Length: 231
Length: 231
Image (cartoon, rainbow over all chains, first blue to last red; front, side, top):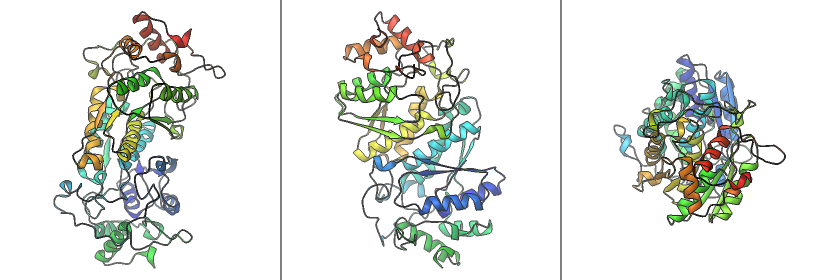
């Protein structure tokens, strides 16, 4: 079970899961995000990377708001993204969580992945969170992933019956450049992915200035390669 | 933040939260359950018990299925509900989880409650789970609730900033009769609540034979009182 947003991290995660021999079911959540380009990208990626099934489920988090991605607020541009101490990212959240943080988003997404997984008797969940080159969201940290794994075993029939749930977060300790290199090695076409929080509404062209764009751009630069989505 | 299904347990939970002085926001999830009577009941209860706000959010779990409540399967009738050892309900799940179990439902519901709570700066979540007179669902046990509370602190901005999330499950160790008595003492009108998994589709009348009906009936009987919803 692979959570697939349409961005580059979840695309590389899907490629890793496939490369490890998993038959992948991809789940995309239409949570009322600011634009549809990401959802369209998810469909392309699921097909290109050989997911055996792709579901999109609607859950409109705009009902709650509380984030620049789900409420009428401006997405921050040209922000100085605080450096994360790569050796100890675990302790580094809290100081500067930006307004693009969507309350409880990864908890909700993993819960939905867990629900579908259980109906399929699948015990391996994959999520493309990253705790190095990231925006400082609390639900992208290793201790969050570990806590969800413990919860999943208590929450489900399969956990109770001794078939332990495993939450794989293969990008957790990678830099964005590592992710670019890994994806390239696995044949991910990054031209299919969509990263920007605030693209041009008619063309879908990335803004180049939001956190997501800046992290992506730095990753490609550091990996010494070009981003096919920006050519 | 109170999860409100429209059944008697969550109604009593809302009454308890109000009685403890909380300003209550009630959240109902329209998850594609078999009928609408429960959702209508939730609206009545939120109003009658003085919730200051009531939201209903749609999330169609029929996309996943895997349960008699979300897929075209028959709801079990006249089932022998295995006795739970009231002193140690924690160890008792796993042996006989019925097909009305909805995969990961309470994990999903608490995640959604957490999301709305965080946008309101609310740290107290209430859920009406019960580990005594219950159907043996894994996500109704005390260790599940404790694990979610730990997760919530790691998952959210408020948790990271030291404002700990608390998951209240005031009915956890009550018998169904205790719940009836507690609700009566707090003035809950049980006639507003809907419990049955499989009501008459035109009248909404309870079947009297599913697990939910049988547990409810036994609770009222043991409390020595009448169920106004069945008169």
